[in-house]
Length: 478
Image 1 (spheres, rainbow, N blue to C red):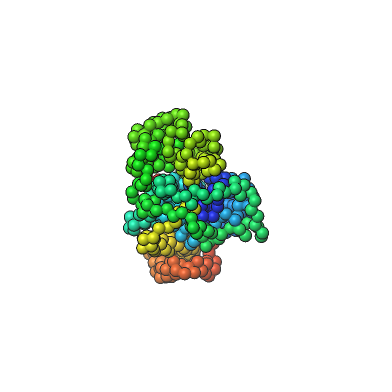
Image 2: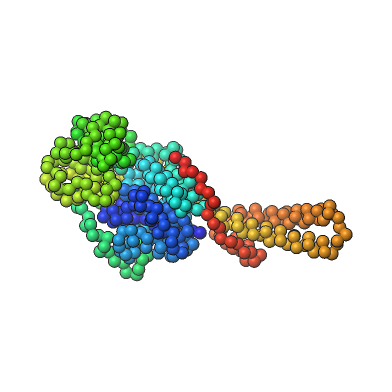
């Protein structure tokens, strides 16, 4: 079984495409089921965040697996595979492992080094485990990715790059970011208009990583707390703010605003009890019918599938931060006088990597490279182990056949004598196989290692059954 990653992210697709692909925790079980009904996808995990939707899969064939995964994602987006392909990136085997580790360490995040992705990856793994859609391959990949992510944050200073998308957005709101605010809204029908000559794979970026990325020349650069990490954004002191949504993003936004000295703070949520609880934790006031005309800043981060804020809700100048995918705020509000709208797309256009973190990035990249090789060694070992087991099984069959022949020819032998002969034969076979077994394991772990198990199977005409998934997946380490 091979490892395949197919994804769409802020680097490759506009927000309208991400909106149509975004899957809430409640949506993911059905998407996993759709991924597993085909012939080629044997294991699957879905990671869906505000700026990426990725499928990690164990597949029995690259082209068949790619076709099934893109078809499932296209059905979710309500478009054809050909229309979705230009926005997709594909990573296979070693590059798939590298991508998973870069995601876990925050190297592939919109805000480089943010640690929030680790929790999101852990949650995605937990859902897949609950749905029994992960086997040995994805189980090991996720366990190792989470470990590598923790190692990167422990052993390097990559955390200084930024705490989260929330802090980056609030830093941009506090600093101005006029160039980013003028970024045009993307056509909501973008996903429906693309065509790719040559079919499915013609438009996807394969193995080499997501196309594009980074900010366009001349656009605003985020500085301050989001670039440096650590401190809350400056420039928010005394500014009244409303947070819409009491989930993880809303809670983080409220905590960041409080640290920045913003106030008074208000929070609203579809479930009033959650808003009240969050307000008590952060010294805010829960409201059930918020009035946007009374605050300077609005942060919206809900899981709604429709606009929470539209032009009719705005009656005075205000800064709005939309952290939701699908979007909470109608892009048309950006055209209103005095309104500054910062959404995921505008934030992505404004973010540029800050200098001074090259050493930390290089250190994390080195960790990723070393850990990828370790995973590939384990993966190659999966292929050789059944072959060696089949070889030893064949040897045991030959010994058993010879012992039966001996018993037929020498019925006069006592039980003790037959036991001695059996013991001797087994020892000879084990000693004969020991060195080749050790050597094949070593060779299989190196470059072109898959050749050696294949040669062994051919030489001894071994019938090696395909490996299945693990019988039980341990609890996710939280």
